[in-house]
Length: 394
Image (cartoon, rainbow, N blue to C red; front, side, top):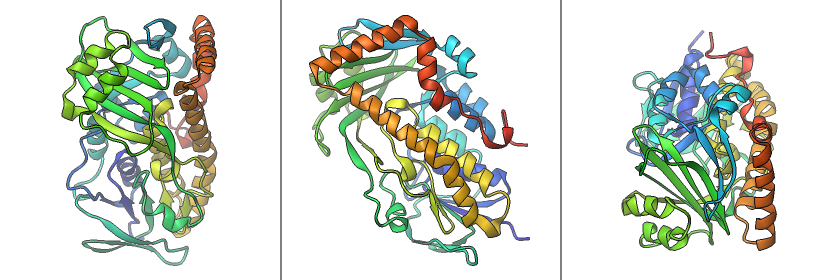
């Protein structure tokens, strides 16, 4: 029987993970990325235990751990620096089986790209059309370089997916979450620096460790969609320059051109399915979420592992397999989108009363942490790859 062929649209975290997962299952893979090279931007990201298990299934979990820093002691503070709760990753590891690691997005991209066979990745390749096919005929993908025939198409083309509206014309698409975010990386100012998040009125600042004594910083603020500042570092200082140390110093240390700004959008209305014909939606194209749970990349990698598992049985019945993929992923990812949005609403609150209630609740959790904290994150992080694989597929 001929080797099955998958075309993956998008060379981000989800697309590369899908390509790697399918290749390991014996598929020929073509990854189409419209950028001239894999995008090195994006600053840092956190990978939770569920994401690490998915990476273990792909055989790159240990490589990612080696490129990462472990968060260690972390917690939540007010903007004046008062601690609301603190916990240790050691305890969370005992509760969840792994730690939360932080690395540059470019490092995760490199680790996933290394899993693809030579010639599988096609940069500077724009997809112009997709015919989803059906049980009796293959899918067809039009590109600037010609048409590709595929037994499976994986649309991992992000929040602004061009494939999603073609499959589900009635779906309203992503909606603005009400806030923007900034991200940058700087040198660690001191060896005893405390990490975690600080919540204030209508804004959040986070500080996470990176390998090589670097720090990944991010911030959010409630603003209308589409706004940009001439100098984003100056805008950060204007908004957060009076927050507790070392936040102002970290912002001052950033290179102005190294501060990335992105509005937060999410798919508030769940899609009816994550596939149609022979086309599967994956990652942000299927279930974009706010960054508050640090689950966007993790859920995309989970998608890739689960998708490869379900299409492994029979190429002829890929449309049926995609229904099983939807059944496996839609309920979980919908909960993650909703829970992340709820956390965002709480973190971004501007109401003095709600802020007091929020901080009081966090302080109560802090007194009982890490037990309550581990129970809160367990639904997101207590996930195992399908088929009972603990570290990697056989």
